[in-house]
Image (cartoon, rainbow, N blue to C red; front, top):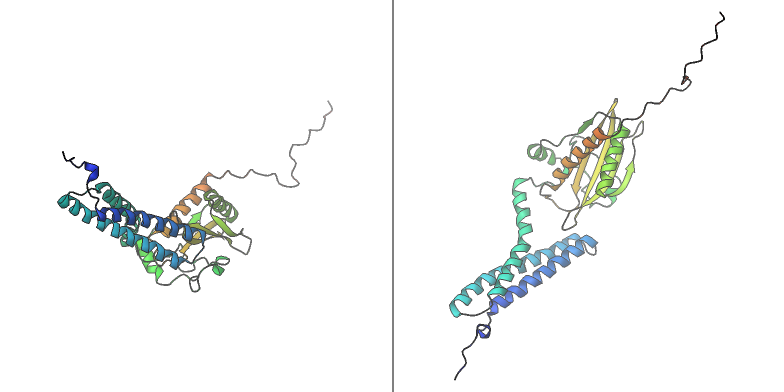
Length: 278
């Protein structure tokens, strides 16, 4: 008597097999491109091209996965699990670029944000690391920034320039950002802190400079944050500047007040009274 074929004996859909294969391959290529970008083994453009190729493979995996559904339904083939893996992994890889695309629609195409658009803080040490022609704040950014981020403005701190500088440096140290130069304020010099920030996933380098200027008995804090290569930062620099200003303001407010020191030459105790004769 002939044996009836079991469920596991059903032919496997080749489309489903290739869907899962392409999805896992796309994931490996994406991880490899992230490692290359974060380690700096290659230039950014080739690394981004590798990541773009991973997204193309992810899209093909999704298309083959849906196509295999039709074949499996019509021909009774197996491979539904592999097709689902290809679709899920493909969508997982495409979700981050889709999220960035949604953010790009809500933010202007700028990659350089400054609290002072008339006289923005300048990169000094970082100027040697940035691509040529990216050190100056683009004039066209001022109007775009004003419309998109009207809340980005200098911080007027009720503290001395040294106190504001120390608070800013403490916040930068807390975040473990890479400080490449730090110069405290002097009587005829502004205090500056130059640092490098890495984006969470791809690890792109974004450069920042904090300028602390004495204004009478108070201080003014300006921040500039600029992406090193991208022409669109998806709003990341504005969010970082806004958050850092709030943290510095809070750090200044919570800083302990300096203890009053006695003046030189003034006695700490009153002299003993002379004995009077009765």
